[in-house]
Length: 137
Image 1 (cartoon, one colour):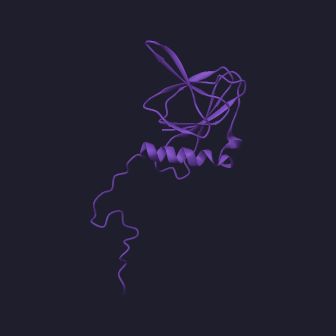
Image 2 (cartoon, helix red, strand yellow):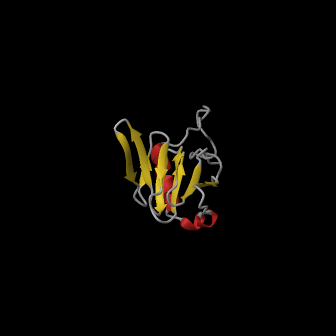
């Protein structure tokens, strides 16, 4: 009999307990970028409501990593605060609103660019049509 040197099926060859760690921000960004590139996986789940933004939760395919993914549809002229670490604009126009002592600044998001946030962010849709964004935390 030949021993299995690959140690498949063992978490740690020394018998130590492995600790599941949450994904890094870079891993979240990569996941958002990859999912945004596959609209066939989520486009049918979108709902549009003219009265305000709609959050559409996306299920984690394997359910083990604790990552929350969701889409948000933004009607024209509406905004909301998003509690995610990573965001990307998929369609339409969206601006990040920053309120500081010297005034309010709106910074436009560019489509298909993943943006990493340090905390909750406020977004608004300044455009004439619905916008769609993807978020993760």
